[in-house]
Image (cartoon, rainbow, N blue to C red):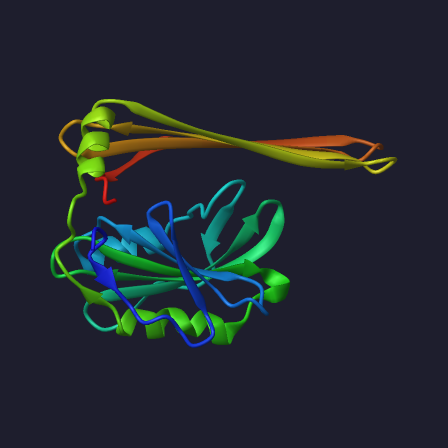
Length: 220
């Protein structure tokens, strides 16, 4: 009830709620369907967000591989490609608007070699079956919202691999999110990668100096 959304789980997919999101998995198959809430309130906002690169977790960097496309008057779908944990990955995301404000995003994510277009299409099926109610704020959410107002959240992650005689590869990323007391936020991020193959080395540093913003809230 706190997320304000209900949806039918596809046949054969097991549903679990974890860390403010729903995760659907089909045990014999790779990949997962993830359902998370969002705070956007118009089709234009959904389209603008869908045209940007995004991150789906630690060590991931995903960029749009298709043009955002509208699904009716309240949803936008887009495909992504990139990497997750250093492995090539693909995803499809469908963001749906709720009549009560905000909404939910359905994401099918899998490594490129395991990506299944049939499963990706389930995101649109779930989107069509979504039913929204006014989100409820739990007592715990009220407490955390008051604690986080006016604070900075810092996210850092790193990883790498090495093998005898084959060199080393590594990466690290960081993101700062500033939570304003009026419900707005600003964020910036950076990414670094390095490789040493034994015969030479290379590195990459990426920064996003332009702060991205929006609205934040604690939902559960």
